[in-house]
Length: 417
Image (cartoon, rainbow, N blue to C red; front, side):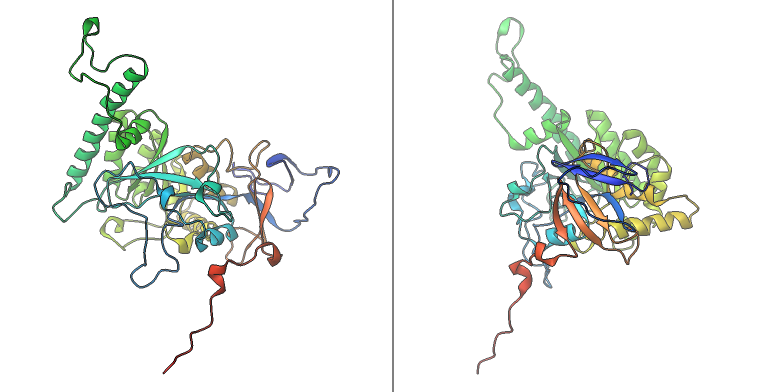
């Protein structure tokens, strides 16, 4: 068993009423318990994918990528949008993720704008509505972007990196004033009132603004901030902006050059969600290296593997294996009990859920995977997956996992003259 907290041992795991009741080298079987024999197999916490667009793209993708709802492009600030309003729960990518051992995933909006909207954390279970999939009580998240993606070449502001940062600072400064006014109003004080209660420059209560509400929630620490950012210089700038306005960035996503500023990320308490081997596909990724995650980890930072594209959503364990192998080739000691954290406890931390998921420990949610062998082997499959103690996937019992109508296909249409 790899417990997600750095431990590795032979152990029994007892699941009861949706939580992990106990784990030990040998546990007496409680009356009425269902016993699953896993001798020779590996057990880990459920995997966590911190960066997906599942349910918002048409899959499989067509030549033009098909219809999608992943990005709202009407303005540089669309913080008022919620990606959960665009998620289609029947998307096949959720089933694929579950079969790959993923028990929690975050769905993010795209990265074409600066303030891209709110994320949602879900469980990849069969459902009709996204509300049925949502992780109960999970903190909300807000997606920001820096660098090339939000730069516009159609004459709309902003058109440069300095313009992006100026826009971020201006919007956050306005959100500070808005939050102060709203707090005063809730406290029974008229915003802007001067000595003696006379009306101040505002003169009336502030008008509700959904975009400013989102940014005010960031400033109050109520939303986890996730930033799309590749280059080391961009990452450093965003960490400085966060420091200026008093909030913490939960994770920098993609972070191709995180290894260059690993100490800054560590000191800020910010995780780096990365790929093991994506480079050269855009200018911002030209200095990416496969040892990225390993070097962040070695510096005492928080390294995370993420998918971004559905084709990787059911292979997070292999993504971690590739990243760990690159680190070992560079001379770092990265045993399985350490690498598993990149897809369990570290992403749980960045989602603000490390007190509920990401580790096998007493009282934690019973999100557990039984693997057919070493989870870092390409020959290994997730045999059984449990979410909140319920067996939601069983590779060895297809009857428990009926195929969706979307996978059945249909016979080729007959050609008529």
